[in-house]
Length: 323
Image (cartoon, rainbow, N blue to C red; front, side):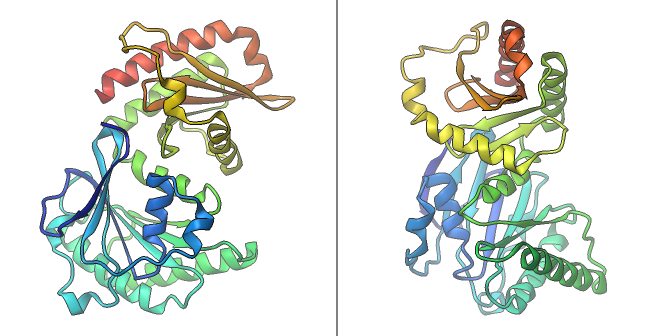
């Protein structure tokens, strides 16, 4: 099975996967375009004029590591359909993403979000709630910050009035025209990957022993990272990394003919890219679906054999964890 198998039109009554991300929002909020960009590799400019007909079925996208992302139909008023089944929010490996159109008045969306949070937290008090403040393209930096602060304050204030726990609520500024949307979905996903704490420790050790600045465990098709080390993520570096993958070409073609994987197989180096005079990007294959994306100083090239040895050991450990 590929890393992103699409199941079109699953009925709302069908059972959900154990590890699941529930994507919801008002009609025309942009959530379906987000899914098509990430999982179907649609061009963002083609999505601008796309008309998506109303539907009462959800779309499921299967990621590697057993996570399924569900795009739920956009609904103007939850009260009109009786609200969502609280059972869909139950479980330790469930996460909610709610998409808000930043270019429209947010009052209605925020009212629906609060109604959704009431139901969701009553069923699962520990549920992570991720608010994507979407379509920020075209907004000035100042207006982006004002929009985020306004929405965040209103959500947290209303939750406080109702004594709802807001400790698991996160806010992200997103657009399909930059990698902000993939970074936001990565931040949601990595909390659900099996043994995510161990993976982070493993990548921390890899960085330290290999003199690297940053490492991502990347799903090469969707360009979502499923794990990273604990150092801060520079959005510009991540955006450069995603663009680098695009320039490499079709990943499945690159991986063709590599033969069967073996636990003791040395990881194949994908590419080395010079970012500037002081930075290099290294990409190593873990399996046909995952790669280690490594960022480090130019001096790392002088100890490339050590880097490749460490990458092979880390890749083997990752395969054992995720198999």
